[in-house]
Length: 180
Image 1 (cartoon, rainbow, N blue to C red):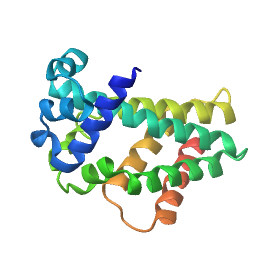
Image 2: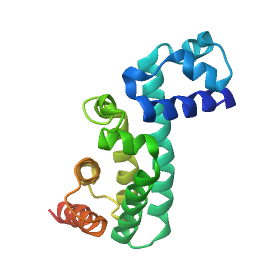
Image 3: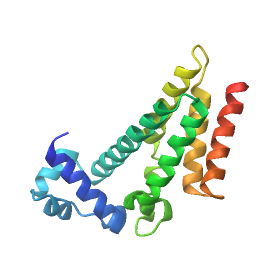
Image 4: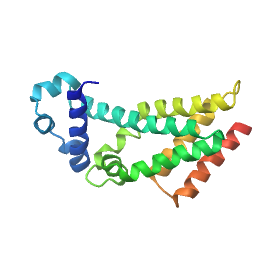
C-alpha cells in the first residue's frame, strides 16, 4: 500500500468517526491528505469504495493482531481468549470502531459491519479457521470458526456483560461445536 493510500485511509477513518458516512466529504479527505479530490476518486472510485477500503484496512489491522495472539499460546482455547481480549480491548481504543458500534456520530456506518460486512466476516473466519486447523488437523472446523466469529461480533455489537464473561461464552461455544 502506498503512503498516499494509507494517508487517505487514515484521514477518511478520522472523518468517518467524527461525522459518519453521510458527513464524509471526499474534498475533506483530500484536504487532510494534501492531495486533490480527483486523487481520492482515482484511488477509490466513489465514497462507498473509500468506506469499504477503510473497513478492509481496519479489518486487516485487527486480523494481524488476532493472528499474532492465536500463535502465542500453545493451548488453542487460551489463544482464542487472548485473541478475543485483544479484539475487545482494541475496539475500546479505536475511535472509528467505537463510533460504529455505539452509533455516536456514525450510526449510518453500522451496515458496513452487519448487512454489508461480508469481507469482515469472511477474513476473520479464515483466521480462526486456520488456527483451529493447526490444532485439530483433519477436523472440519469451518462451522466452529464462523460461529465463533459471529458470536464475538455479536458481543461487540451488543455486550451483555463483562469482557471475561463474553470471552468465556465465545470460547465455550467454540469448544462445544468442536466436540459436536
